[in-house]
Image 1 (cartoon, one colour):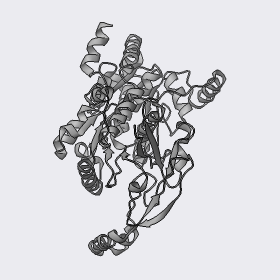
Image 2: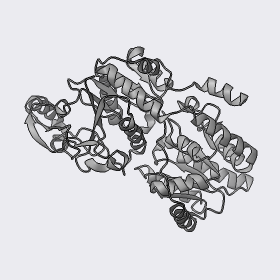
Image 3: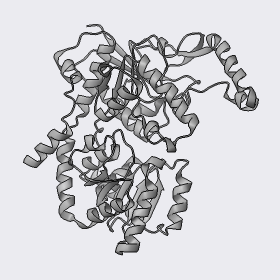
Image 4: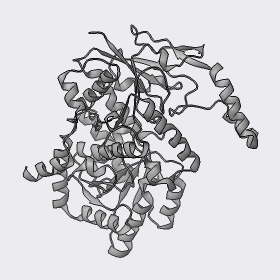
Length: 453
């Protein structure tokens, strides 16, 4: 059987504001471990650091350096933007100049050899797309960046949060997304989303045919294995840093506004002032531009001693915090799929989370749900999780059961089936079954099964 060569766009900064996408790419790395196919994969790394995925890939895996015209977070750079800023009222003229010059623009092309695992270099070639010259049969854009090309493409829009919570986005950003997302969904051979919730959004809001949108639930990558002495050393360091002997709740999330840190702070203050409960919370994650607003409210409420924001921590420290946490708390206002929920289950931590968007679909009955828009409901959920050990043990058990419904190998095989279909290759029986919706048991089925077990 002829080899199928698949390019995967991984042009992001792993230490920047793209935490969820890093998890997605870690999951896609499982494609390289499937042994029953004839596929070959090439990962496109950012120009500044193409090798960032190397530690999670097998020896010999092909990586190419992305072009300069893509930014480090994966968005295409407008080379005329500095001029447009200076032109001010003449920006419409700049747009016209850009349209005039675009057909003549030089793009950067990577000439890929499938006989070498070295990072390939590229040279400018006039009027040819970088992606079309990768020597591949299919291109996968696993996050919101997209480039139209002659290759069949697979596109992950992830979610349409900007249409639900528009107050968290500038009008410029909404316009940009509303230009990019529907166009990419229409141009792609297959649109892949992680939940039925997001599929309904894409179908209803963008008029995309239902059969074109494939639901493939994400599954968490395996946990790294630590030597006992290394784990003990990490625990000692964290004990000094966070006083882990005292119970605490963990919320790992970047400080985007929709992650709802402000209401979380209000809820912790409510418990302190009205219930005499000093609940400790550790909020890890990259500090975005919204962080100063959170820091200001943290100071105003006098919570600096019991709510900590250490920023982005190494994965080894985060894993140790999961293990030490009394429970994991996820008060987000919007989620297409929650990596912290998966990670909590992997570490045996009980979970409480928002009952919004795709979370009920992912979680089923393996979490304590609450309304993230109501401060008192958040507070009561925090109080119950911190005081009810029977509830925590039950949720721990349910989380372990629910985690079994997600398989990294099954997710990888489902994506492989999508690639095969996009390239017009013959599908086997397993491919057809996976694309037919057998990727994960439903929330309703999981709920019934967990009650019976």
